[in-house]
Length: 418
Image (cartoon, rainbow, N blue to C red; front, top):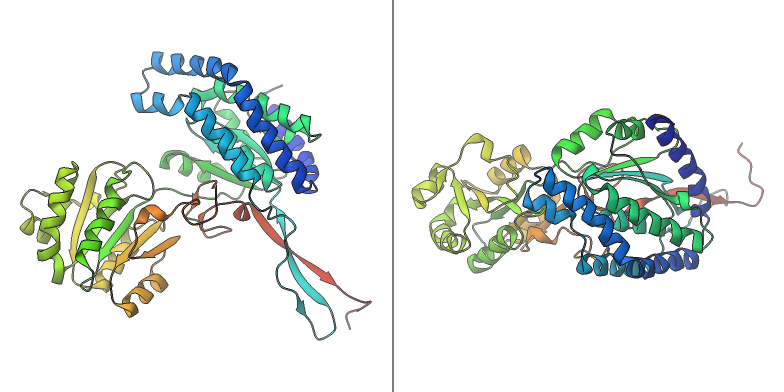
């Protein structure tokens, strides 16, 4: 078969499997997840062997050390994947849960029930652990999934696909409920993005280039997350010691992730007291500062910021810093340069805190806390599929509930419409 025919058959099979999985009870789904975790540990040597093939190819192709490291599967990776599956098995099942019932004047009882989305296509790069994490979340939420990992992880992903299929078959579920695209050819991505008849949602996970490509070419709704340009605004009423701790954590704790702070905004009334001490802490951690003219006047060691610095997602120990006139100026800056991901204010003024949370457009808006809390686990969702900066149909971290939708269920006693 051609690549297009292969993907079409996978999509058709996934649609059939989704109807089975959508009716599957929680006990069987959990048993499948636990079996998958056991098989991962039992067949770790097989996964390691296949992973070595990917690592050897990556090194021969001259991929960066960081890329090679993201590809690597070791004992810790296996333990993390297996542990994640067991954790998901312990979560409440959202499928079939009911919202409040409303009684209509004619006696009809109207409620909404959570149901799976159907078939989800996931296109991602590098990390083989995404194959297991995504399959587990989709299975628990009753969705079939088609997984298209990066070509650099093809051997690892195929080994994991066999384990997933074995777990599904062991509990009487169709192995087509979680399929891995078996080719490196990039034509498979375009073919998957054309399956609007069978695939209900596409979730891309990777760099901005991959996500923009998917959005441009997909005939299927896409959950987007282009980049995380996250801000912390230090208000004039802020506890400055608290503000320093929050800003330091938001930038330094893990700078290469999407919820790390990329721009620090400071009210001009406290900039003179706050910035010199903050800069010393950042300097000890190796942070390079790129500042507006007011920042550079206070911090001669800071590099002058250019226009390209304000919308930048550095993903390293580089930080843009701007002194602003007030909270309105801070929100204007965020509106112009932010990415709808994560925004934070440090303030002791209740009214400004409430206004900031109400008016700032981001998937998570924090008061007196680090941007690093925009994470499914930290917000009580458990494991997550990723963070959506779209607003349809999910906004923010995507846990099990965000992988479902709701249908209306109506009960009557013979009512007819006049």
